Image 1 (tube, protein in one colour):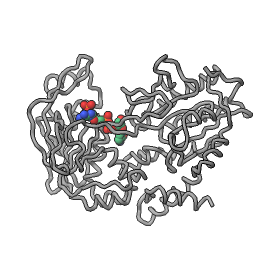
Image 2: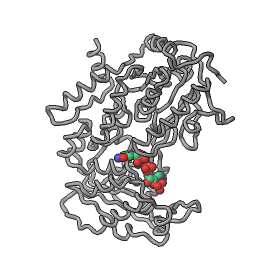
Image 3: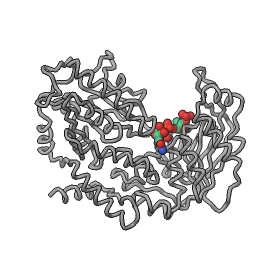
Image 4: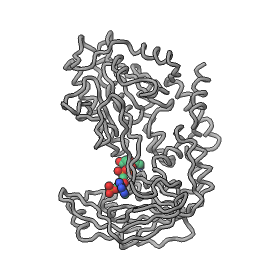
Length: 470
Ligand code: NAP
């Protein structure tokens, strides 16, 4: 085990921490490190993009500016002494885990969960079936997805899954161009959604209304959309004896509120002439149908069963129906991606860790100086604020390890790493480069009454960053 040779955290010898990932978990971790007033801490944050904020920029729906406003708090942290942002640096391409350890006392991974879960059913790879994560990244202007194409020429879309991402994508498909054009949605998505023919979005949940993972505020928002009817079949909104018993014993406030709301939706009379979001329950896709592209989907009814551990599971029955549709989004959760050299728990799709201390799967021992926070630590759950508590837990352990003198011993100064990156031809961007992009985007949005017009291609982002720095 690497034990520090001398005390760190002094003005002469600051505690040097590399945080990889600039989403909420990374920023909350940086803020918590900066709050350790008894120590002098230097946080260097790395991100593969020039633009910080992770899912706050690339995941949160464009019509949810209030949720995005958390970035104002992150801006304050980013301006504090002892913090540097290094954008356009990709782990595994430009830099390795082992190299970070050569330059920092601690490395904290907050890289999120970049992969999507798959349904593993026939026809899933047909054109017209996509991961919701792709669609979300596309409409939010993530540079990796700027050239994606989504065929919205059919009239019905199907979204599989009952989480908040499913609600987000269903809502974005239903919003009118007038509602979208006042947001920071990427221009290419605005254009495609303007031309969209989709008039009905069917959202499929494999379990019942009580087990839906929606938060009630998001579900309520669907019911208050100006130009969209929300349709719920009254029979599907009703709970059977098992459902009622589960709700009473395990449901919690959110499940109860969701059930009440869904039952209220089921009593509504559709206004007609509007787009429709149809929320279905106890239905699961069994196959996607089509020659070259998706033309329909076979869906089966499910029955609910008690799992013994207090949970309710769904079992697929033989009762099937066919739903015509030309566009399918699977919104069934995210998966973390392994980082070469960092232990990975393949079952949970997270970095192998104990409350944020990265540990060796063979021995269970903590690996000195390696930590994790956010979705890559605990899996893709919770809202943005959940990452605050998660990051604090990790940083508390890190600070405990500083006090115990159990951290990594770096061989070089962080500045040497930046020089190495330069030698490799990596154009590392700083926080000022992001501020230049930010000012440009806001400036472009202002005359249009939009919060910003996003730059969505890597070369134009780099160009903007270069221009203003020169
Ligand atoms: P999620 O909340 O975990 O929901 C995933 C859904 O997919 C569940 O309904 C799950 O059903 C279903 N599912 C999983 N495998 C399936 C399969 N094989 N077939 C059919 N359905 C399947 O995930 P998410 O929607 O991706 O959201 C991730 C996190 O981000 C959540 O914590 C969410 O609250 C958060 N988020 C928040 C907001 C917001 O606050 N506005 C917006 C977006 C995302 P089972 O329950 O039956 O497994």
